[in-house]
Length: 270
Image 1: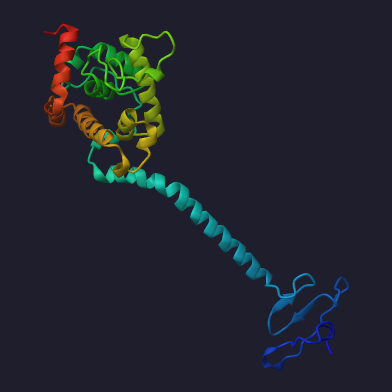
Image 2: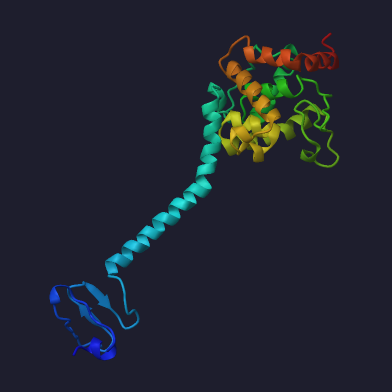
């Protein structure tokens, strides 16, 4: 009778091909606690009556790590990739999605912008240089936000040339001062460009906030989708150095012309 049969008299050891159960003691080996069933290829220790082969254990551990890693990727990385992918696939904004918008290009702005925005060309170039932004990107935001009207005030409370919300200003700052307004607005825009690495999502974040910009395009607010449409199209045309922009003309026809008329009056251009 084997040691195993002595310890477990009610249990039957099944060995394929009727091979015997043998004991292989060593000097460090307690045969009362460990035994080896040759045909089964299983090592049974004193603490695990029915164990797995060490190789099998390692394979199970590796498999567990692979499964956990896959779940983490799907849960964390995939939504972000999807959010960016939807925007890229659903639009052809060309230069608007380039990653070099943080590099100051120098010079002026494209001739396609309205005269109210052209009025601010020297300041736009200076503000762009200060924040390492493309002057055409700064001009695009000004075009849509106020058409160059430093006194612009929205129903939501956005103020000045770049329609900056009050919470961006420090106590005592004049939100309608062009330099102060530009500093706060372009600081925010530069942060968005650094965060997203492309102009398209930076435009979306400037309008709807970064929390909306990281979502899939279909989940953006309607206003942010319109803003993205206008801004990326205008910026693409400006980056190409065009003298006219079909997208800018669409924006003017959709109501932008009224804001530009008020800007012209405010600037004394009439």
